[in-house]
Image 1 (cartoon, one colour):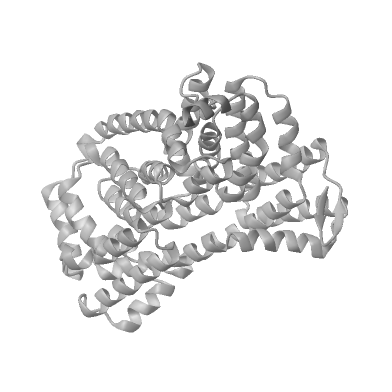
Image 2 (cartoon, rainbow, N blue to C red):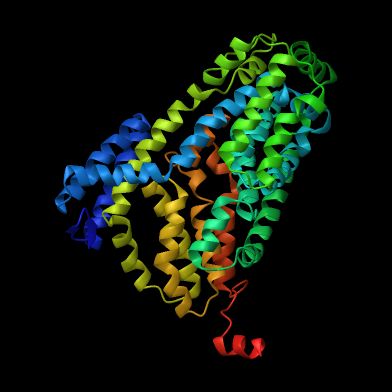
Length: 474
């Protein structure tokens, strides 16, 4: 039963829930792959279908609207970050921050080592700041520009960026999803991170080796001295490139993030610093810089690909992403609030017997939850609630639950076009999810490694019996 406005509504049966969710997947898959219909339109049609199913259970229009609004309101912090990231990118471009990283990066990175070193750098920044979005919005934009100049396919570059940023976010003690997973599962934060080391580090090393091997296939794509000189000359012709000044916005963003200052405040201050540098150091017109925060425009360097990159960012550039996210959140609000997702999963969980199967079901449940809800936060909380007793019955430490939930929720959200993360990465990197997803190796290798290890009984932390704890206390 679901209660809303003091009115009880019957929970949907497993068959009804499966039908409702199955039609949503069919609408999106058929419309997207066979008829090339806009994803926004498909989400709207899915929303109508799910609302009809909720009304069949007795929900009135006001109840359905409340479910939609509640889901959107819970995701407001992510929506604020959508807006701020657009301004971060535009302001960092005008301050010369991204140009500085590109200017010196061309000397340090070669096509052979570009993918492996890029993944490492993205991982390190994400661990330090606790945000994959901030990493993608700063270093990610730089690597997209560098990859394009080195003639490395952009979907491959975007996949590498997502791998590194997601690993760092997943392992960072200052990450919101890492803390949320530990808290929701009822385990200690550092116990959660320790548990993830068993499956996450081997997966990361495997992907690092893979990207290194792929990098050798581009060893003949080395830029000539003339090509590097032309790009660096174009950048130096527009910007003053003193790292001590132009990298200050990035330093401010990273420092405040590491000190666990709210993301909105950290990003806002870094935008202010970048705007001041753009006006007083780069000599840009204040009106032009402030207008760029809304909608940036291409520069005139004489190199077309560079002009397009340096003209990215601004709030307007995030509008496609933001509107899609709002529709997806509204859809998820009904699926979750009316009990469709819970009914779909409860019957499956009851039938699980083996530990390996339990881990696999937890991960698949995270994927299904992300597809239904449009973001990972509610999926993490819901799956910890649904699977908690089953892990206890199998004498598994709750840190194994939190680890499996992250592998199903945090890692898969960037592989789905209509989730907040998938839409954000598309808008920021300029590469559609379906193009970069095949190269986001870490995001699905980690799940495979986890399931295989669980099947062989490796890396499974057992609960400490209560009597043992009491004896140790004595």
